[in-house]
Amino acid sequence: MKGTVGELGEFGLIRELTSRLTTTRRSGWARRRRRRGRRPDRRVVASTDILVEGRHFRRDWSTAYDVGRKAAAQNLADIAAMGAVPTALLLGLVVPAELPVTWPTELMDGLRDECQVAGASVVGGDVVRGDTITVSITALGDLRNQEPVTRAGAQPGDLVAVTGWLGWSAAGFAVLSGASARRAPSSRPTGGRSRPTTPARPPPGSAPPPCATSATG
Image (cartoon, rainbow, N blue to C red):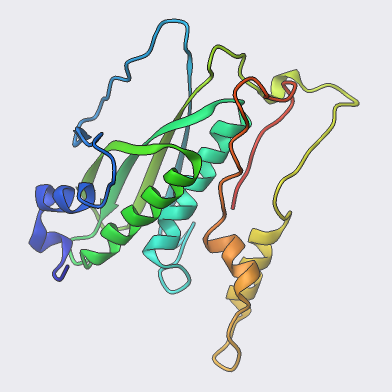
């Protein structure tokens, strides 16, 4: 879609963003609070992260789609690390008026696709105009009547398990920072920086002893 965020307006942008979703759970947009219907014995865990342009991502290094995948992945990974099943994601988005509409819509495409990997959905959020692109993500997960996995239960001698590639994000940053016009950066480490992936979901009840946490990207 052509045009800028300012030309489209807040509610027009919300319509564009929700139209990218493949789920019917779209009623939470522009609401500061959202109720999640849960039985009393099914506890929910949450994870929140904020990505700010210029500090956590650069548009000349990452596409909006990459930023969306990364923003979702790092929160959904934290949910899985707590022994919960990812269920929902909320988006808070700050965008400049002159930003092309295609940027936030491609961001939503990335969020949607990464949520599908984890079996979750984008269920709501809010958008506001500002000077710097800021992406705030809150992910929710269902513990399925299990105890949450936290670092508080770690003991000497516990097994430390790692998925993915340690240092891949830092390697990608180093490659992108040093990339010059005469040589294109390698896609493998830069992908670890720009678009990390969500770990596969463990089956309910298979959470490890309470000594784990997660960091993605």
